[in-house]
Length: 112
Image 1: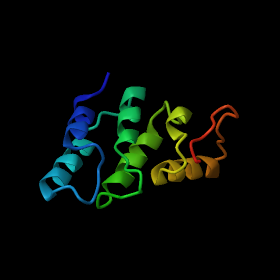
Image 2: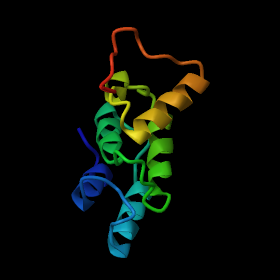
Image 3: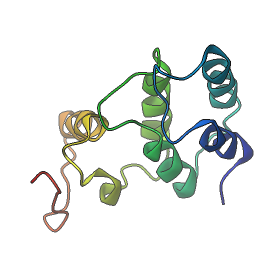
Image 4: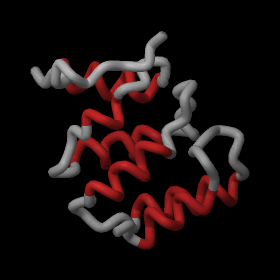
């Protein structure tokens, strides 16, 4: 079940990006600050879906999203990290590799 702060983030847009209005960016920041920790698996999956394909940072908000995801006790959710064309997926995978964590051999990818 998604917490209300995550639902609110999903209502702002499909992804968090620099192209959002100032009001949307402030609303996203407010909802990120309101996240209850620890995040559930559903929360992590939803937050990961908000990270845009091209790596847009949404004026830094997506780094906060990344840090919240990484702090979740259920992390890593390897099935959310298959699309290696996604810049945020590549960043998350690199950070996991730097921590000595590697995906299961059956993970596969969609890098083609």
